Image (cartoon, helix red, strand yellow):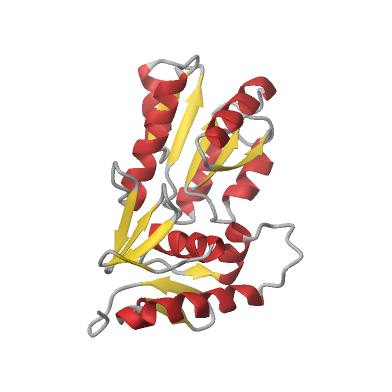
Length: 228
């Protein structure tokens, strides 16, 4: 699971990043709104944690820009403003939740986990399922009818990204940036290689057809008749 934290208070941002890293999330961070918007527009995060009062571009402007482009990524707003009107404005802008500073760490974690579960249908026990495939996010293993798929670390990450964004097209760039990182020296052709690896491991179960190639766009995980 990958989370983007955009907060201009260095102490708070570093504390939240450290906390989420301890919880085994992959975390990206930005201190300014324009940097945060650019990172969020890459479409590689499972959740955004945004301060409202940011330099350059506000948290609300980030939310509106993303929703205007059709992004469905869950967004949790952080702010020192606690009036009802401020909360309503935040939620009506397209945010999914709102947390007032100062906040309890346990509450922040609880809200983040709730938003991620809501987005990806992640069960309380950390299981994610789609089309006969089940991923155990705690053990980082994939199963089909209790039979392990024997996924490598990168194969697991790619399949998890596909399942969390099921029935949505993911471009090669999105998959590459999410799994290998923006600064990776690996070429983007590795995405096709790992899609091939996944299909090969799903084939004995008749589920390789779940991963569809969308010509000129990328890949999508979607059920279809005869794929079982």
